[in-house]
Image 1 (spheres, one colour):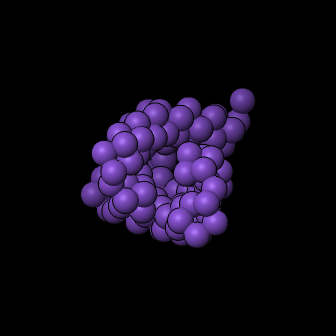
Image 2: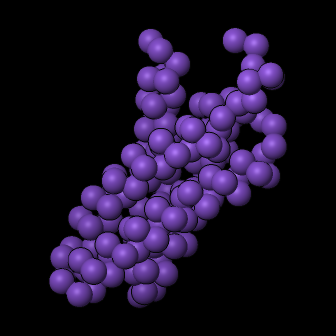
Length: 132
């Protein structure tokens, strides 16, 4: 199995764990009547923090420059969170679609975008430090 494919599979599995965190927090927050957009921002932040550490240590195995990598990962994640939040606003608030269905579809699209950006930028290893 190629390293890229293994990392994609790992990213997806870690992403599923992050989705449990994200959707759990999101569901809890909307049940206590927190605005869906704010609930989405808070819940996705929780999922992003969880996923960053799993991806850093278990998947991409990069432990250097953790603060810079976290900032990059979090910014990429929040840019895609803006996408999911816009989807919630448009499709739930304005058009009346089910919030969980919209969250699932928009999160799937955002995850694909995140993988590509994070693989190329956030978790890139320094060529001079790689011994593989």
